[in-house]
Image (cartoon, rainbow, N blue to C red; front, side, top):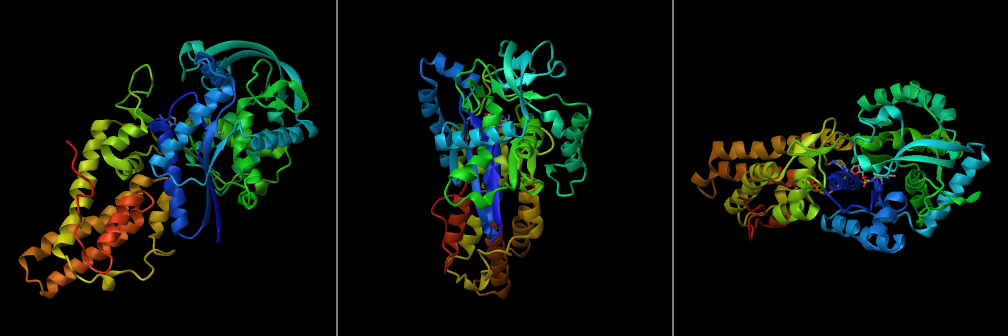
Amino acid sequence: MKKFFITTPIYYINDIPHIGHTCTTVAADIVARTHKIIGDEVFFLTGTDEHGQKVAESAAKENLSPQDYCDQISPRFEEAWKKLNIDFDYFIRTTDKRHEKVVQELLQKIYDNGDAYKDKYEGWYCVGCEKFLTETEMVDGHCPLHPPEKTVKKSEENWFFRLSKYVPKLIELIENDETNYIAPVGKKSEILAKLKAGVRDISLSRENVEWGISVPWDTKQTVYVWFDALINYYSATQFIEGKKDFWPANLHLIGKEILWFHTVIWQAMLLSAGFEVDKLPKQVYIHSFYMIDGQKMSKSLGNVISPQQLIDLFGVDGSRYLIARSFPTDNDSDVGIERFKEKYNADLANNLGNLVSRVTKLAEGVTTKPFFNPSFDRAGSLDEDFVKLINNCRFDEAVGLVFKKYIDSSNTKLNEVTPWKLDNNDPKRIEVLGYCIKNILSASLHLKPIMPEVTQKIENCFENKVKTLDAPLFPRIK
Ligand code: MSP
């Protein structure tokens, strides 16, 4: 069995889960479930990022200790993912002592290798991003991603990481890379250009942020939250029983705003800590963003969509389907409740749901065994192009392929042959229904990673003898 280790970013807990976090997590779940179907041994990791200034400030606003605050908020993410039927294997929290220990060990190695030195940091910091800003990253004097007050002037003594030392190695690795380590490939040139433009060393610790892991060789300082957070991917494999062999990660799935951290800083940290090139993560997949009706999603605009809102309207599988179909690969994707409704009604209620309902009614009582693919649930039965598309996070195209191949063709054939006008024993009727049953079962197998429950319901209709549905699979939404 091949091992496949996939991760999502660990989310900041100063926010509650929204459709942006949901999009990455559902995508990772779809990829993970597809790998399970093709027979891989999968380790799927998600979790929460709990240290740093931003979390400490949010806790203080609520009059809670940072730890109590984290303990209250972190479960909201875990619960949201469970409600969405996300089949993660482990939910990591960076306040877990076992994680903290691995962070300290890894940083100690960086220090022992001579890659940490003390210096003064003077400049701007965005508390929203938990990131030191360069002048070129600022727009009108502040971080473009967060409200102006989040950008603050800092002057402090920090431990610095010799990031610049690893730039030549990283350029070489990225230039010679044929494995699509940075995907989609367009992002590769963006990173190379930035690396070649010159890179400064960065802080690895904070002087006045108490809410963090102590720097092992200088307990007055805490580890800069991004160093702590990135290490989660590795620490999970070290402290969870039986997961060591899953390192290196096969796929870090992330949004575009944290590309630099994942493709440059993370790799440099690992190289500095003594990891060989073949022990670096195999791929970082960078997706774009959801926009809500053409606008950035933000609390102040009041346009944030929560996963619960989606579930209430479209059910769990409907929500997962809509996310897959609108997933922002290369470009930002404009979403909104009205668009979702249209898509849901067109694809799920009127097309897939209607086909299953028609065919089960027409074929009620028919013995289904002859129509089963003998390798029904097994490796090899998924269309290769479909698997490729899923691995490249082209979910919209992957679903499009399934609809075209199995659903549309069935509808066309039904309308051509009009079996409802034929006698029950007419061979033409039997043939067309058999064709549709096979197609529905194939569609269902392919759609399983996206809609695990509905596809199970579909399969139940075709166990032994065809049974009609008790209720529509996807009730139409007004
Ligand atoms: N804690 C860091 C990540 C550390 S990983 C070692 C962080 N957290 S976050 O809560 O801000 O989550 C950011 C991620 O959420 C993005 O990279 C992306 O995966 C997802 N999204 C947040 N908003 C999004 C959209 N509007 N659209 C799509 N995904 C977005 O950064």
